[in-house]
Image 1 (cartoon, rainbow, N blue to C red):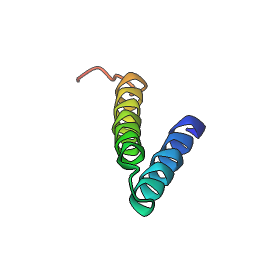
Image 2 (image 1 turned 180 degrees about the vertical axis):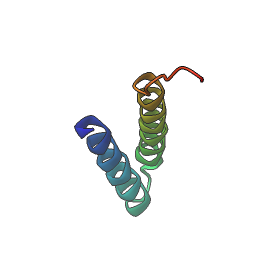
Image 3 (image 1 turned 135 degrees about the vertical axis):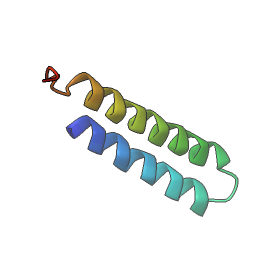
Length: 56
């Protein structure tokens, strides 16, 4: 969970810096890609760690 929160904060910070400073579109792009990777990580982790219960 620490990794998820760290990536989330880093992605938001990159987007904010990229939007605030003129000519740094690559920072915004990196932030968006980091947020997408973070969401994919969260989805994979939730699917991998979900308890599998047999159907009754």
